[in-house]
Image (cartoon, rainbow, N blue to C red):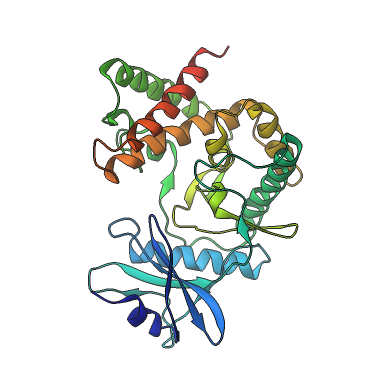
Length: 310
């Protein structure tokens, strides 16, 4: 197996290689010509090389067009990916200064007004992403689909969420019922905005420096409903007492550049993200890991709310 220092050397890195995070991908901080960069070792079996290269092509074009995101860095031989001995792929992207606006399961520290102001800016950032993506060439981009089958089909992209092992038989029936109702609802959604989306704009993937926001980690990006990007960004705040205010702020920020989905549609896509996450955890954690129940309870809560709201 290739050592991180051996892999980093392909990009001309010198000095220590520091592990930053190990979630879907292992991410290391490396130094090139006295400047930091991020080395990513991609999760085996998730995105293939063509899909990774498409991500890098897309973000290159986004960055060149002025959108705030990391930009890929080529190896010394000009290649953008390297295959490792264990079959995984490595890539390097530019380092983003600043700090994430939050973290997984971390409540926002600040006032409701400050939180809403921040999510107004995030809505604007996501609208910029969609605007820029629509303005650049994406015909050669090959990425997963967050479409009707990818979210609510018989075999969703992130897994069959109704098979989450923590669900009781009654809860499983509820999730299947909610899945079928949501499938019919999404299928009937006319003229829904669809195109390239980030699909994972969680707090830890949005960096702030001064008044500027930068979007990182495009590993889950693909072609999908634009409203899904808005729903995803609210998924860590689904239980807030002021969720309606936060949703309205996000919608208003998005609406500064594009036609925004309705508040009801944003909450619908929030529910769909909770479904996806409840499926995502199945292949990533042992059956008895408490994470299964955490994601299942979020999905159950949002499904019940959606099904019972007039």
